[in-house]
Length: 33
Image (cartoon, rainbow, N blue to C red; front, side):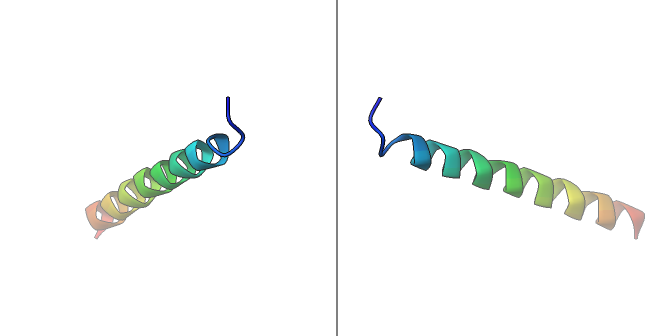
């Protein structure tokens, strides 16, 4: 594996997880209100 690819994949995964959590939290808050 090339060293330049792992950081990119890690960043993409972190961003994807953050987006999922943000959407889930937003949906939960909207559901409460």
